[in-house]
Length: 207
Length: 254
Image (cartoon, rainbow over all chains, first blue to last red; front, side):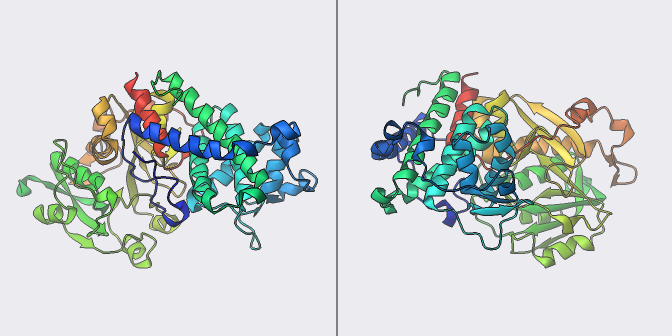
């Protein structure tokens, strides 16, 4: 069985996840196998062992003072605030909920929004790198936030499908930082799902 | 059969040809009533939600328009499934019905313009417990989190899944029923809740629906309906197939 959801561009097929068939354990096997191939292809981009932490992996991008930056929210700044531990995840949750709702509704995330959580007129769709960092942020919060766990995990799975779809078109040499965060996100995603399946005494643990 | 059905003069339908709409009409017919009017969008639809999957639980084989004709139910049909279309909206601005059962296209949400006519109350059955499980495919999230399945009838309001709750009912399902959720079980459990909701509102003497008829008040489970008042709840989105499988697995291991 083939896992088809990262072979198609979600942005071009808004019905991709509607009325999906139940195909049993084979489907989950196909999913985990496909994800493992993506993880293996990015293993060498896990830069933590070189840099000490994911915060050190980030390029040296200046960020505006908090909370002023949130008046015109920039997704990349939000991610950096979390990764550099300048903003705890609890404070991050309302912003994540908003961004998730935007992605679920429009299948896109833009780089800037205003305080009314509307896309700014001069904003652009996030880059692959920003999507990857956002995916990592979402995976970190989904791991610890029980109440919104499935809302965040659901969006995480879709964003990661979308990013894996784009991997063949990426220049790996120029996307080291992005691949690091996508790799970390996929590892988190796998951990969350395996924990859930263990909880249900599934035989698929370790798949 | 046709002559035995009592026409509810103030009841209308807003439907899209789907298993849910077919189950709803079957539920009304089983109650011995029929709506006075129906509005059918995208009546020639062949999209996935319109699948004609055979089941013994309700007539899922007959197209909605054929059923409406069979029971002599006055109806208007349009090819568009865009419920934001001004022509579609205008139907409801002039509509004389007081209660309209809503079973529109998948993912289509009634926006503010539908609530301009103060005479109309849209009745919707949501496949989850409210206010906790708002949004799309809540039954799978409910299975993941609590292992239960619930359906709730409500009067729609402008805010998503936040209108006045009428009735809520929990269902005990088999694994097979969970596996057949999308095209059979979901429409079937919603039709049961719709049936109980409408039954609680029928005034047989007048041939009208009235809001929460006192003689049937025991049917309306106010304890359930009042649960969670003041709870904001969570809005869910179309479930990813991996989580859908995890939900079914979780259920199968119970």
